[in-house]
Length: 336
Image (cartoon, rainbow, N blue to C red):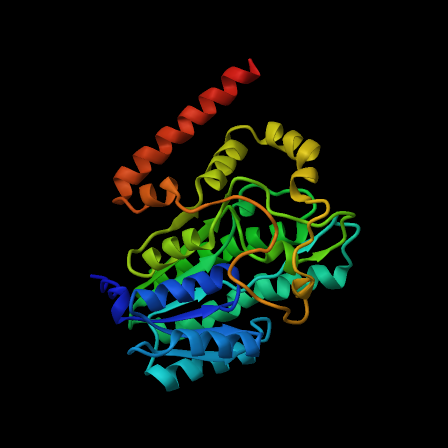
């Protein structure tokens, strides 16, 4: 029988991409819930500020500077965690970068860089985590995207990496289950989240990028991630808007293609609002980090979809299947 996952206040949690957006929200929520945390990121100054702010009152927060595209750096971060805490219980692969522009506009070197971080970074972290957790028990949580279900124009490299991360996560899960490794493997699929991602991304469009609505706060992702650290789940969608987009893509893929072709570029642009200049373009080097984006937008602070997915698997499945059938019937009736 598989060992149950520990309560979060008994865990040591490792988070990559820990100084910005979803990663920072995950660290803050884990510390709030009583976990010990190893925060990994490229931005040394932001890591120092994070540790100073969150440590104390019995809380243990350690940091490690590492670029996840470097396998040796990730392995050193894992060893630093073991040295500091005696081990870890959950590893969260969150670090990611992006590029906006058409496939032809984006230089091949930038395509490769996005893969180095978003795919190989997840691979490096997953391998390091699996080596430590095998037999001992624990959780690996990978941050994917709804864009693994529904590619979008102007973000081809990012979409491709998230498709790859989904396949990697599924393969990892099967191999660990086959070996009886006692490791839970979850893929989190956020929708549009209010993080500095559009400001951090390299941009080849003629207007500043943005995340399209509906937009959710990073705390929604943190809620899903910390749940997965304690309760084994295959996949959790973070944000109902993203879940609807994925269901729609499955029910009517060609219709969704046409919608993306018509409005995909426009809904990812925010003319006249590029955000904070100090955050722009962190593809190769760290820039200013923050929890939320600096562009003007409305973000939802709760997600019914996440709460439904926390229900026992059978109940959640019935609810989600019902929602999918209703959506498919609605789309079919409109097409007639």
